[in-house]
Length: 105
Image (tube, rainbow, N blue to C red; front, side):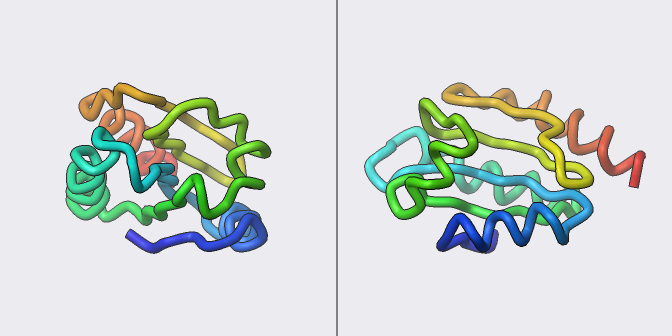
């Protein structure tokens, strides 16, 4: 999972990538630490590009994406948000949504 270090970098990725997953976490979030390997595994198994954004390091992105809790997973397709989950991640639903995007691609 690649790390995003600025809001400008995120904007560039949204414009350039056809599809990707954004995982937003925080260093002091215990759930985030448990979910990170699961997200990485889903990403690898589905050959799906994924990025990690540390919420405390990129506060502008937190405001622009209307993030109110972590962890958050957002799937983007053709520059638009396709699916979002926050706090409690349903990994089966996430894989289903990735499958939907992959079929379009």
